Length: 414
Ligand SMILES: Cc1ncc(COP(=O)(O)O)c(C=O)c1O
Image 1 (cartoon, protein in one colour):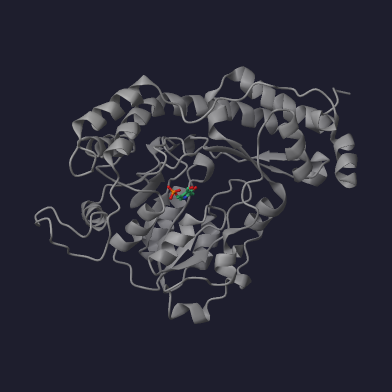
Image 2 (cartoon, protein in one colour):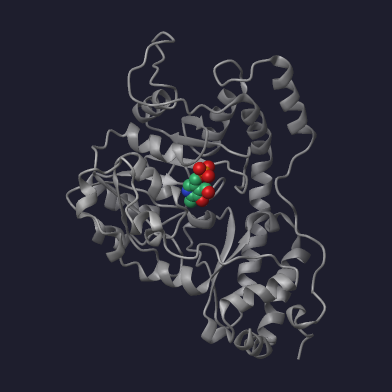
């Protein structure tokens, strides 16, 4: 029998913290000060955001990059730019952050939830096909946790039904699918630079695309409806000011310099740890198809089958935390079960369609099971560590497994 669990009064396996996030240094300081002293702080005054757009797009296999204030607005702008009519349907997964669906509503379109695959945690192409109606106009696959969705099948479905594909690549900076970068796999893609993301400027987002017309429309919408040949007070389309500022552009330029090395490290460590953890009974790490040639490990995700592992997820998470391995259960329930959807609190959006919608009837059992009972998340910065860090995480899981009976008794009492 291994040592007593820290949760039950034993010694924690680890006391040192895992690598912290964000990573920054003199390069960020230098660029930020250069912007400060230049006095050119806005997108339209200085060179930083323009340089970043160009470099980030190129690094993700695209001609165009349009940086903006966050990765929620960028999803909405992609939908608006595509000229999709009001109250058309857009297929989204239920296992994702709020924005993948809220952006659809804020573009006055209807999110239709198609379930995820229980092994990959990504949108299931079969569920997508089943969700298509005469009103469907777009699909938003999420490359969840940094593993590209099943893009060949999704693009084939999109082609057959003439649908737009917007990649939600908020987790997938630097990820590859069949050696092609996430961000270049659909018609247009959206990334986030919010604090937790694999590249960050605190807040921020970008759209990437190889479609000239879509890029021009997005650029105009993110800049008050201006067009390149127009004068300053000339506005061609309903939109807003969603431009990113130069301080964030400066940080992102330096973060981008770090991305390749960081992504290689995360992928190497994530792969190693996933292989070790999947040896434990009842642990199912995110299944990685051969198509995923690089995982960006925004999260290492796994399912715990409590019956097979021998202890329920909530107790396992508590025990892991006590051993010095911070982790979480992620979303508590599927997106369509959020009060927003249950109560159809859509504000001024979807005035006609709301009457015939009923999100309480949506059925996505895989997503529900993952959320309610099984999922565990480990965050990206851990994977910037070394092999010994990965071994510590693996040992913590092993220790919890070996002590599962004591943990179960504790869980039954508390
Ligand atoms: C899958 C997904 N999509 C979109 C977003 C939205 O990005 P942001 O927070 O930059 O608005 C997030 C961010 O948390 C996300 O996780």
